Image 1 (spheres, rainbow, N blue to C red):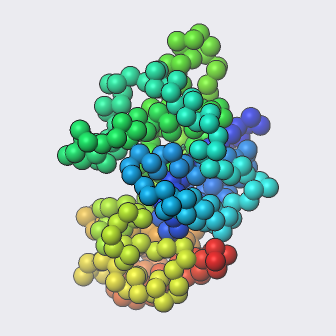
Image 2 (cartoon, helix red, strand yellow):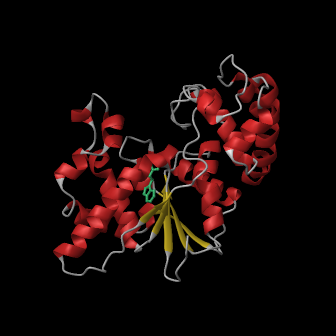
Length: 298
Ligand code: TRP
């Protein structure tokens, strides 16, 4: 990536309370790295959070907890701009204008709305439907050029580019909004649930055993990794043999990312081991990364 002096990074994280390993590996680690490279703006997106009902007192606590998580992971307000979305009214104001640029047909193609609204579409909030326009406003308000996001947000970012382009065309100003580019991490796109390798690790999963919290104790981490779903086969030596083994792939991915190695190299190292042995090593690397963060968070 070549960096120009007017490059700006923007990203948003929903205030779900304390952060988990998926947030750390999928987002925070990258944010911390980027803040030393270009102007970086990180936002706790509380207006996105209220697209589904939230108790006000819980939302308030969650905003503080997520912000504390940002700082504990290494975001530094001397290097980055860190703030809460609703404290800057421009997000809502630009979102309205962008609502008038985006087309209904574009919104109807958003797969995340379909997933989140499920079979109860008629009863979903209008906010949930136009949520991607608010996300576009977040980014375009600062004329951000780069947006670190997970795989699941790629479609929303493409929409933000389409909106920027249509706005520039409609108002004959081809450079008004830069077209923001996604920064998707190469080695890891998603950390999956420890109970189901096809589902993203998420705060909304009912089972605590599906995720590792950044403030989990050593014992909790060991217990959760021990219980993490795997299969009865040993660790294979090549990527192809991991096909259709999503839980095995997930644990090996987490290990690779935490040890800064390629998945191929982890496989070479671990080939033939059974998962119970591998899990001990995995717990150790998770503990050595996560527990110092958890302590800072307290
Ligand atoms: N929609 C993102 C998510 O759920 C959060 C988000 C809101 C965001 N605004 C953003 C991400 C702007 C990147 C840029 O994860």
